[in-house]
Image (cartoon, rainbow, N blue to C red):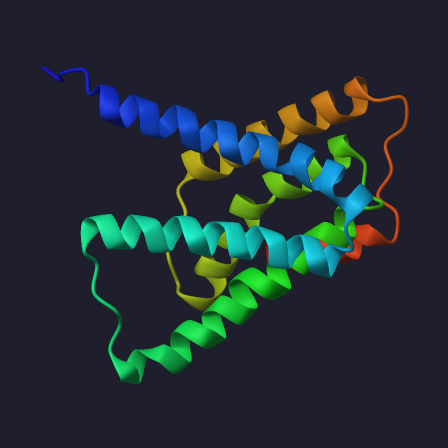
Length: 160
């Protein structure tokens, strides 16, 4: 029998809350900052939070040989991703952005099947498309207009 773990529940609630509010926060922040400045601000805040956490948990620094790959992945995975996402959020409606984010698992599954030869079960495909269909219904029904705009290409590039 599983026991209730309040720390896990709190972690899940915080994660869902922060992730769910990110798009609203970007939409608000993009009114006051350029996409690049907003990305920089987000990275500074998260770097400070991570540094504080690392100090309390006494996490050691990475080996010197690992630093170049950290810099590369940090640049690609954070700087490029966040800037492209911020540019896309300027012109993509909230419904369209949720639709674009919801297709990420489908692309990951397709790429892992194509390049890594991973087997994808029927349940995974059915579940992915049911989820996608649900987001499509919500997206079209929740707004007066459903638009992608030029920024959709930046948004899509941030997914990859």
